[in-house]
Length: 198
Length: 402
Image (cartoon, rainbow over all chains, first blue to last red; front, top):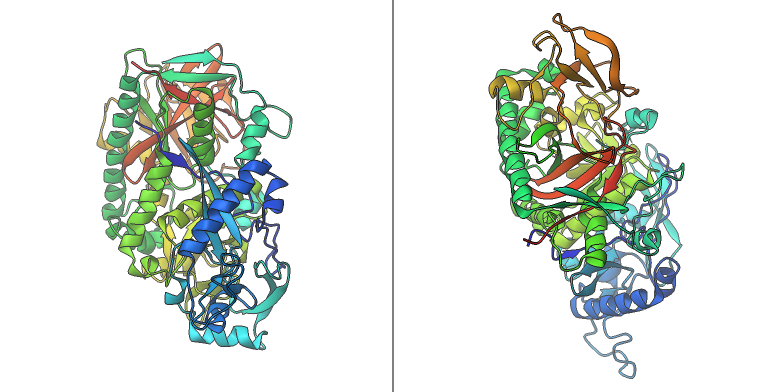
């Protein structure tokens, strides 16, 4: 057979947190599909429900796990984490030794020869997208960045941009990070020529 | 091979919208995605195209090596000061500066002669999602039992995995790959999102951003993303030969030469992407059955030759003209066909004309996709004119069962 066994159909806007109109240093907004409702605005409802259920199952099985809410939020953003047993064990309540995971904030839908598949996607607090079953806890932020973020705003020579942090609990809130350096100036040639590949 | 008129799927526009491909119809209402026909090939024909693409790619790699070892940058329209990045990346082409992808354009009518390579789009090839996903879904809906020359997605996931193996920091996710293109630009953003999806499937950490938002920090010599974090790996859907001439182009050359940033595609791909490479290919392999006579000047063509003139660093079929030449290499009468465009400054390359596959006035160019040096897919563009451009229709294909 000379064709792929599966392909990853795009939920446009569902993968990248920065699929938006955006000028240099301008505000950025993310568009993710955090829920079945958001998905059904653009997709058949049955596909969305099935995909989200599959992504949630995989999320429960394979989400990156943190020993504490603090460790999880340091990586994923304030309010972005949830106890791992939430929802999966309605009557259980929290217990000693609870494990925290990032809330599922998006999902990829793919199509295969036999149907569909879904894979959960997480965005960390700097907009990095990570797929499911990875160990985010093993990749700490550079210490100085963490300090800057905690301080929340920049020094004299920096500019700042509003930065959207996806998260199921408080989607739409933004926080500020600092940016340093100068504009690299890339894109000017293509902007003037209406570039779209070759 | 055969062009088969075909009933479009019911609600085909909605089906394309559903898979994230809303670009099926141009702004003027004409179809860009065209499933009112498909091209049907025998397996032997597909294997002929596949072998031709891998053979010519091997020759292209040799030609890039020829340019790099002899410093022939002017011949391919590139400034000599870009050489440090090109040479450093060429030295690591089997590892940390490996190629991701490319797309050949082949002319072939299948009537006995071999396929002829027209050019290699080695840096920013278009129609990736159409080829890998949209026509795959078309086949799955319309001819689920049939096959297609299209393992492009699997091959690209494989390339991302190979890149991960070359960088322990990517494998551990201590480093990420940034994906940048012009924004806003819905089509390029969709392509970027798709490439990002494939990298995610390979297990990488990724981030998309507007190329205009990249920053440069003079103190550290690092390029920074919009959160102020250093960019270690940058997949840019934007040509190298433009970036190096923009504000921090020289800083980019230096950073790439020293491995402070790993570019995808790597800098050596700007040599491979030059249309001038095909003049060198002919010089190094005169008479090769998969190549057309190609030169940087017109004087070497026999009187009466029909010759295609293309800009050295052109794109999207712009500024191309087809004319008959006299003994001195000058055009006789009006051009047979020509297109307008902005690419008039960097020199020209001349290539012997050869007809494309044609059916009912539709001229089809066969885009053969490469992942690294492996041919892995076919995307077909059709036009009523002789020059394929950015409005030429994408037409799906299948492999007829024996």
